[in-house]
Structure formats: C-alpha cells, structure tokens
Length: 406
Image (cartoon, helix red, strand yellow):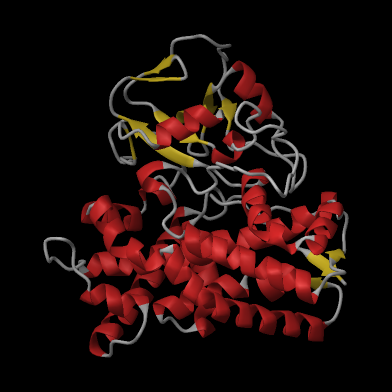
C-alpha cells in the first residue's frame, strides 16, 4: 500500500482484545490516526488489511469493486477451517449463487419498516410476558437468559413458522456457524449438516402444508422474471434469518441495557424523557464497542482508499464498530449522547449489502427498552460493569450474562 501514513513492519493479531466487555480496544484510536489501513493477521494465519476510519469503511462497503468473493484465489481465509469461516460458508455461497440483488428484493419486502411496525404489538406483549417471568424468578436475574435471548428467538421463529421449542438447538447451531475460534472443523461440519437437515425438513413440510409465515410466502414468491427461489436458497434463507434474526439482536439487547446502566445517569435521563428511546437505540448501536469481527471484502482490482492505493488481491476487513467511534465523523465520539441527531452510524453496514433485518432489530430494541423503562424503572446492574464478560471466539460480539436487580 502506498504510504501517507505510518507503516507497521509486523501485522497485528486480529481481532483485538478490549480492556473490559463494554470498552473498546485501545488499538482503534491509534490506527485511525496513524495507520488507517493496517496489516493484520486473521485467526487463519492469513493477512488482511483492517480499516478503522469512518469514511474509509463507509466508502469500501458501498464500492462494488470490494466484493464478497472470499473464495477467490488468494483471498484471505478468516478462520482455519476448510471453508474459511462464516463469510465463505455453504449458506453464503448458496445465497450468492442465487444472485444477491435478486435474493434481496425477494426477501427484503418482508422486512420493511411498515411491516415491522405491524409486529410491534406482538413483540411488546411477548416482552411483557418475559419480564413477568423474570420478576417471578426474583432478583438478581440474568437479563440475557430471561429477556435478551428468548425475545428475538420468539420473534424470528414466529415469522418463519419454526417451533420455538427448538430454540436451544438453534442457539447451538448459531454459535457454531458464527465461530471464529470457538469450535473446530468437525463440530462446524456436524452442526451445519444438522441445521441444514432440520430446515430442509421444515421447508418440505411447508410445501405440503403452507401457513401464514415467511417461509410459506417465499415459496410462492417470484422475481421480476417470474422465477421462484430455489429449494436450496429457501433452506439457506431460513438458516441465515434464524441466525441473524436472533443472534445479533439478542446480543445487542443485553449490550444496550448494560451500557445504559453502567452509568445510571443514562437510564435516569430516559426515565425522565421517554421520547429519547428512538435516538437512544441509535446511539447505543453506534457506541457499541463489542460489535464483533466486522465485514470482510475482497478487492479484485487496485483501488484508492483514503488516499492510499490498496492493491488487487487484498482482503479488507471493515470494522464498523471502530468507524462508529471516529471523532472526525462524530463529535464526542467516545461519549454516549442519547439525543444525538443526526446519527449516521454504520452498525448495520452500508451500501447494497447493509443488514436486511435492521427495521426488525430497531423495532425489537425500541420495544424492549420501552417496556423495561416502564416496568422496571429501578433496574440496575447486579455486578460492576468491569465484571461483565464477553463471549469469546465468535464473529459477533455479545455478553455471557447480564446480572440485574431492581
């Protein structure tokens, strides 16, 4: 890479560790200032280029030259498994073969903000039930176990017509599919086979007995040329939505509450002004320092990023979480400002591949926060913020547990 910034002789091991579960890695700020295109070594041992500045990450995610072709010759493998990890998994390859824009148009119309608003009363009612169960359990309680995990599982299972009783199996299959270093290749292969077999049977069942659920509707859907989605793509879609639909949102619910309670003045501000819930959710999404691995892209031709030439054949890791803490893009970037507006964070990515389910995630986060503020105004952490623990070894970032009392 051409060089308007400091070059590092040795690549840094990535992902970085953070001082605590709610803090950001110390490397972010230094790299943004001195080495915005940094050489890093991935868990596979392969090298990649890490982007940490807001403008660089946003531009790369919107640039079609930076592709998702992570199976290309010379592309860095993320993990040391045969496929190279989640971003080059059978699900990813199946959906890529379907045609990303075509697939996104067919699925995306079911995830509009208007449709998600229609789901809100049901999400609110389920959250109320979960809070009732947590209150019955007594304090202290783990908010992850009682609310943050079961709510998104219920929502996505209900949308897809999947039995919620199988949620523990989904949790295991999801963790394995999102593995960075947590599971070995044999465990990943076994989980993939089990998950695919389960969902293949579910899809066939829906063909025989359609219901009022997303899978049944997708079977009847066609693209602009009248072509239906393939059977393999239906199974892959169900898998992708089940994993993304509960894993990331469950993690974010817990992190949101933890961040708001770590300095209880934030919680008190929301109690005093509930109209801030929407902007508070956006700010927590921006502020989250435990956002996970980031998004990898493969560059098929030379490109200029932030004034530096990135050569063809480079695998680039876009750290949206680091970018969201960039002082050049957000005034007071390291301060949690619940009224921040505008807030052009990129927690859901940017460009054509931004998160399809973000209207659903926003609806769930806003609803949970509304219910908790109303039902548990005295909610507080049952441990010191520094005692909270991250789940290690996954592509996504989440907390192991969130002990609370009231």
